[in-house]
Every structure is written in structure tokens, then in C-alpha cells.
Image (cartoon, rainbow, N blue to C red; front, side, top):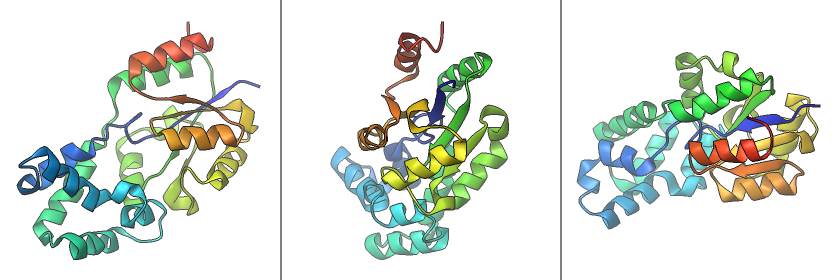
Length: 207
């Protein structure tokens, strides 16, 4: 069976720079690098706090913003700017999309596995032809599981109809890479499109 290439979304196929997002939405919190780092941490909590619950579909957009506001005292206007900047940031990265389309042309099965809150997942589906790029995919918010939980790798492989060893995860997060490999998947840590292309060529997946 052909190796299934499974793409992460944020900071892989889609642009994701949390510091840029926060600086755009909250310039008053970006007057120094240290201040910006604190604001990013307050907002996203390394995706393990309130934003992690948003990723898992356990809370909605209004609730995550209310929780952020309770911690930070940021204004309603600032929070609206934040979500506007988040949505604007999630744009397909042309160089990575070009690699994906090369894999598609080679006839390799393609899927996605993304920690993504429900409203942002819906936005990506509206704005991009995901059904043309991928045979199948799993969003964390729709299955109430997220990387690096081993359960999501088992569920995803079953949804794809592939054995774990026939799945190759492309992900920027070291913990997700380690978890995938512990579940029997193959994995490549994403840094940038040129290095991804080289890794896929070394695997014989691209010429």
C-alpha cells in the first residue's frame, strides 16, 4: 500500500506566527520582545490551557475569549482584533502547497491531522479546496481529541483506512512527532518547504 502523507496545518501547510498575530491585534503589548512573549503566553498558553480546550472543541469562541479577558483584562475591541488577526494569519503557504501538489501528482494518498478550533476549521474549509487537496482529514475539535494524545493517531489512521506504519506525519511540533512515532507512524519534523522537499526526495516519494 502507498505511504499516506499526513499534513499538520498550523505552521506547516498554513501560516501560523502567534507573535505576529498578537502584535497586530495588541500593539500595546508588543513594545518590547519580553512584553510580546508574555502576551503570546497569556493568549495561547502553549495550547495547553484555554486555547487547548478551544482546539479540542470543549469550549467555543465566546468562551475562550471570555477566559482570555478574565486573565488579561484586554478590551472587547482588542479581543475582536485578536480573532480577526488569527483568521487573517491562517493562509496557505505557497511553497508547502507546491510540495503537496507534487505528492498528489505522484498519486500518493494525502490526509490532514490538525489541532484546530471548530470556527477556524470551518473557515479553512470555506476558503480553501481541502476536498481537492486531501482524501480525508481529522480536526481535533470534531473528535474531541488532539495531538499529542495517542488516541488521535489511532482514530486518524482508522479514519484514513491506513495502517499506522503506512502514515507519514508532517508536523512542526517535536512532541507530536515523538507521539506519532510512538504510535507506529512515520514522521518528518517540518522546518521549511525546502527541507521538507529534500526529506521527501530522500524517502523516494518525490523525484
